[in-house]
Length: 144
Image (tube, rainbow, N blue to C red):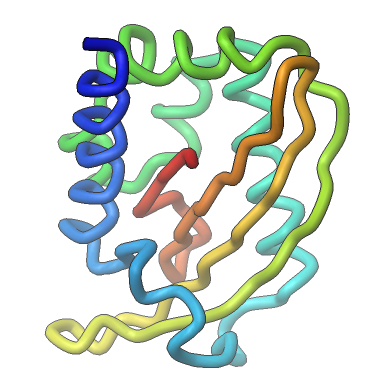
């Protein structure tokens, strides 16, 4: 039952990213566009993870999510579906490996950046795939 719930949650995140035109499955297809700064993308991804770790759902959704992701993954969904996953990981310890790549939505021609961040927690590691639109708002979010 628990694995089924986790798969459903992961599906929501992947769907949210695809709806925003920045699906995690596109990561690695293109190099980062000149519209993005790699250090800024990494820093912003770490900030998103910190807000999540601190349980700052209102700030995360209001300030960091783009419009498409807000409609697909609202505050209640983050509180009921994402925070329990974070709590199961235990206390946050450190960021590990990070990679940044880019992509372009074939329908809208919109450029996006994808940060893949591995983080060490007390109980185990987690991998976050966070996609950013040209305004540096989160358009796709996935935890593995």
